[in-house]
Each structure stands twice: as structure tokens, then as C-alpha cells.
Length: 269
Length: 270
Image 1 (cartoon, rainbow over the protein chains, first blue to last red):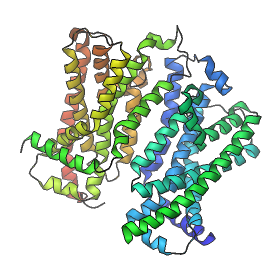
Image 2: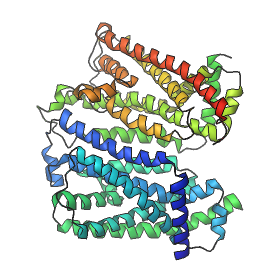
Image 3: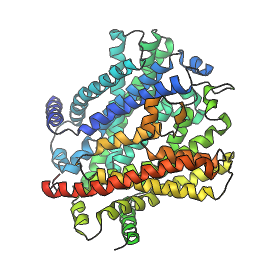
Image 4: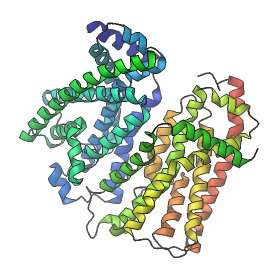
């Protein structure tokens, strides 16, 4: 597993340095920045700082700007990491190297992990850029406790990585990235509480947020950096996020294995 | 070769290319519908009771109509940003050079491509929007003949915008970043989700760069506010001015793009 991890990490790192499509990089940063600017304009110029009372009761904060900006930041981070990991196999297929990869006895987990860890470098740079811009538009963090934040972010990254495995297998089945990934992203943005609390949504739509790691990640991250306290519901969210990650990981590993067999029979047979 | 035959050829090509997979209906209907729902719920964190600052620009009972007209017009423009983005694939597949080797006038090809893609991309969401508008009610029209005029203006503006973007995308091998630059700002600054009048000066300046801003002013003026032709003549003149600038810029840029491609040979080299 280590050999395929380091080989994939090195290859992806070289690709990033030499031939990474910078449009993706700039695009992810701009997507986060747009959410920040739009939240700023809506809050100050259209609604003149007047909030719905339910917003405060659902979120436990009256700091809408930080709520929406963290939503944009973490949404952009999730989209970036999901794209990096899930597009790996289909990119190999498009570039003609999938057959060679499948012939090797390398560990698939190591392969995806190498891509994810390297991708985290890019996603973190993007998140820092969005965060820095957010500070100019009113993003306020009450506390940044690294001892709590690091485990929360680690579990969140694991869950997003696992979700990417499932997404990647769907991409291989449909032989499509554009529609598959963007359909997930628009649903994820709607139900996960990126710019408004999901409690405002009708019950059946709100239920969908339970299967989105982003939803739990946002609750935890906002709880830690805006509300500055650790509640019982946050411990529950952390366990649910980890459990969801494990479920997605198992499902993703099974789907990827099955899809690989189908791909070999269908396209290389 | 006339414009209609170019449009027809592009319609057939686009249909064969995009409709071989049922997944296309996600981009035709599911995404715009979810964007519309998302925009509606994005208002919820704010004060929408009596005395809400939003009421200065949009009455609360017309918020649904405001959003659906916004998204209807936005989808026309958005689909053409997407279609222009697909120009990159023409280059990757080597068909861009073949297209430019045909005796078709370049400018017609660019606008014809936009018109052809528009027909295929907007019909489903337009039908959905029409049903929503009929269901919600609240339509207030003073001069009914202005409704088809507004629709023609919407189509014409979208095609000119799409043709202009097609030409911009001729210049670059990786024009994906332009998609990011044009898509989300157009949605927000043009007043699809929020009233432009509430914006500060700098945001209004960005709004007035997009023809969609003027189209939305006219469309909502006709459908929601019962404005007459005389009321809308100012916006109409501004829209025609912006469209004229876009057409002149397109005529100029298409020549520059072709000359540039001949010099660098970048029509096939990716």
C-alpha cells in the first residue's frame, strides 16, 4: 500500500507542478469568493443586517456573514477534494492508462490515498485563499482551537474521501464526470446548510442532509470557530460523520472493485 | 450557405452529441430547478416579514415570480456559456479546424452555433417555468403584445451573448476559467436572485456589463410590473446599445482569432 501511495503522491505532485489545469484551481477559489461577496452584499445592502428570528434559533448565532462564509469555504474545499479523488480512475481511462493500472498488483486504497493526500495540499491552499479574502468581508472566528479543529477536520476529510470513492465509481459506470459530479454538487449545496440552515427546507429535503458529510462538517466547524463551545450534539455529529465515512468507504471500495471488473469486460475485453 | 442551414446543421450535431445519454436531462432541468429552489431558500435567513428591507425592491408576494423570471432568463444565457465552454472540445477533437476549413462565414458559424444550442438547452426549463408562473399567479401585464417582444429580445440577446463567448473561447486552449468568470457573477450581479437597484455603485457597474441585466429589467417590467413600451424605452435603448457593441466586438475579434490561429497553428495543437 505504501508503494502505490508514494508513487501516486509523487506523480500527482509532479502533475500539479507541471501540467495542472489552473482553471480548476482558480475556479474553486473564485466559487468560494463569490459566495463571500454575495453573502456580504445580501446582508448589508439588500437586507440591511435584518435577520429572520428562526435563523438565530436554528444556528445558535446571529453572525450570518461568518455562517455563510464558512459555508462557502468548506463547500469549496469539499468540492475540490471530491473532484480530485473521484476523477482519478476516469482520467486514467481517458488518458489510456487505466488498463495498465488495473494490470498492476498495486493497492487501490494506497492509490486513492496518495491522490487524496496530494490533493489536500491544493485544497488547503484554495481554502486559505478563500479564508483570507473572507476576513476582508467580515468573517469573524471567535476561537481557533487546534486541538479540537484538527480531529474534526481529519474525520471530515476521511468522510469526504470516502464519498469521493462512491462518486468515482458512478463516474466510471456512466463514463461521465461533468453531469455526475455537478448533480451531486448542486444537491449537496442545497441540503447541507451552505448558505442557510437546512431546517428551513421541507422535511423530506432536510432528511437528505443526513447522508451528506458536508452537512455534519459544517455543523462541527461552525460550532468550533463561531460558537466557541463543544455541545453534546456536536459529539453526536462527530460520531455520525465518522460512521457515515466508514459506510461510504465500505460502499465505495465494493463499488470500485465491481466497476473495475465491468470496465475490464466492457471496454478492454 | 445561409444562416438557417448552419443553425440546422448545428442543431443536428448538438442533438447527436448531447442527447445520446439521458443524463443530459439533469443539466436541462434538474440543475436549474435546484438552483431556483436554492435561491428561494437563500432568502430565508433574512427578515421577510412586513417592513422587510427587501420590500423596497420586490413585494414579498411576488418573490417567487421575481425568482422564476430571473432563472428563466438566466438559463438562456447560462446554457450559452456552457455551449461556448464546449468549444474547447471542438479543439481537442480536431473538429474546430475542419469547421473553419468549410466555406461558412465565421461570424455566422459562431452565432449559428449559439442559436442552435439555445433551442435544445432551454425548452424543458422554459416549460417548467411557464407552469410555475401560471400556478403562482401574480402576473401583471399592461400591454400583452410586449410579452412576445420581451421573449424575442431575450432570445436575441442570449444568441448575441453566446456568439460573442464562442469567439472569446476561440482564443484559448483552456478557457475553463472564463466559464468561472462569467457564470456565477452573471447570476448574481444581473439581478437574477437579487434586485440590482439595492447594490452599491461598484456592483451596479458590473451589472451593467451583462446584457442579461437589461433583459431582466424589460422582462420583469412587462410581466410583473405592468410597464408600457414608453416606460421601458430607456432600458430597451441601453440593451440595443450593449448588443450593438457586442456584435461589433464579435466581428472584430473573430478575424483576430482566426489570424492568431493561423500564425500559431493552435487550432489542432492542444
